Length: 375
Ligand SMILES: Nc1ncnc2c1ncn2[C@@H]1O[C@H](COP(=O)(O)OP(=O)(O)O)[C@@H](O)[C@H]1O
Ligand SMILES: [Mg+2]
Image (tube, rainbow, N blue to C red; front, side):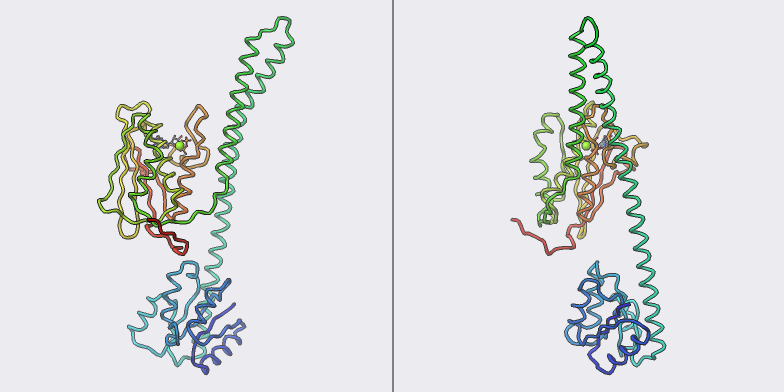
């Protein structure tokens, strides 16, 4: 295993290098915090780092804190090395993010034993990640399998009708007295079925289409609502639906993908409008709340409701209860994908007596490097 040693004291460095090499591991030794930080940020960094608390540029303590803040470096096992041996030093060292703490002067056997604990922990974590990836790809395969089955079913139905109509038309053409009306109605039905299939293919294309990588913008909750209303106000008016938006008086700053997040609200609104076709009380209520860290948006309607037996499948791609074939069952799965790309979650509130979807996502994104400021 690759192990990093960062210490400005050459005697300790040499001692540690010798000890770790004897244990059969590869050592990378550096003399200050900056060099250590650079190495830990490279691709395939060492999985164990022994850091001196006091060294020039970054201290070992600062590196531990920085590493724990940076998600992708979180898995490095950190051992702080220091002459400080007071309980409060040990506590603050461990709470900075270090996994272990060794006081100088150290005993070589104890240090070797602690490094071995670190190696065991790294190996267990690697194993867990590998298992998790296996489970993820297995459930992805299962999801793809069920989508394929659903799509096959959706295409097979109209295809079956086309086949029957063609058979009937051929029979009719062979008959003595051709009934033009019957042939025309068969051709119309074939046309309708072909249209259905081509719409489905189009929806699938849109679904799998790679979206160009869109950057997050710094904007506000007010802006999010305005951008959504711009897209759907006339649709709501046409359908006599009243949309009430409750938002905090304070305009909260949030970071989101401008081309995508409004689409989430839009998809929820479309579903609500559909569910209220027969309702007397055509009202949608959007309410926004935020705290320092996250935003919560609730979308509630007075429609038919969602029966409990389909709660588990409404977010599946191509799941729809629409019998006409016009709706393709992609709205919720696309919306959920967008919210997940914002580091959040889209859920159905199962405790609400009326249909209520909840969107939660962090106000600020972790990769703030790509930010653009908009007025
Ligand atoms: N607000 C709602 N009220 C009632 N049912 C809903 C609502 N939103 C979603 N659904 C149910 O979830 C299904 C999937 O929604 P969606 O993924 O948007 O696909 P689609 O709208 O094309 O059917 C809908 O067909 C409907 O049965
Ligand atoms: Mg929909």
